[in-house]
Image (tube, rainbow, N blue to C red; front, side, top):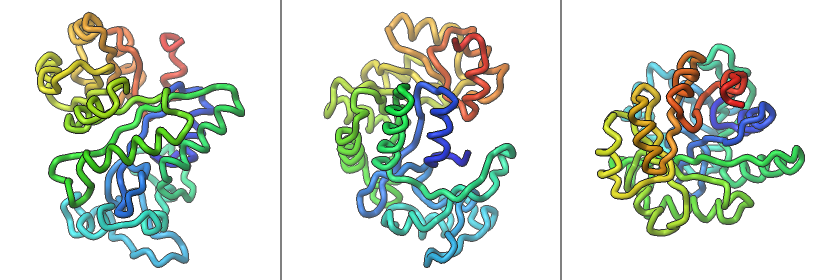
Length: 272
């Protein structure tokens, strides 16, 4: 299913996942929107039929996030009513040829939680949530509001839902994690790491020990997992898509997997 869409999360629940991992950003009118990036991505989105949304250039024409497209169609300038006019589910994704495409807008987080919690009640299988607040210092005040504005908006949505005691907050931006620790000391936090393989240095940089250390899977070593567990920190790598890599991670003793292919992970005997 298309990334960060309602059909994708509901299908994941049908498969039997225990945690839904998702990304959120903030619209110009302060709405918490489920989206991987804070702009309309022409690789996966197009103007919906019969809307007044501007047509998008091709992904190649759009270039990077610093292109003119990003400056015009980033969420810092778009209300949710604007964002909702784009279909981000119908286009085939070049990286996921097996994807089933259907029209889908980027959902509000509150609407997603209403549907997933309702489905959990129907099936009797509750899920947890691992929510990444997308944030970078260079985005502040342009693509996105800074953490001091964005994080309280996210916390308010979760507190108004049934999922408050079943979620973790994750971020690459340590400002987000430090502010969350101050505002909600009991909230489980996830330290996302992309480059530095030295866990002790990253923990020192963060300034406290998170509930979960979540590195790019290629950075994981048995020594890292052992050191984290000695500190009482779980290790959950991202994004592990190949079965051989999943098995290797599990053999190292990781505590879970973030993957685009939960069907592959759930088929592994080691996951049960």
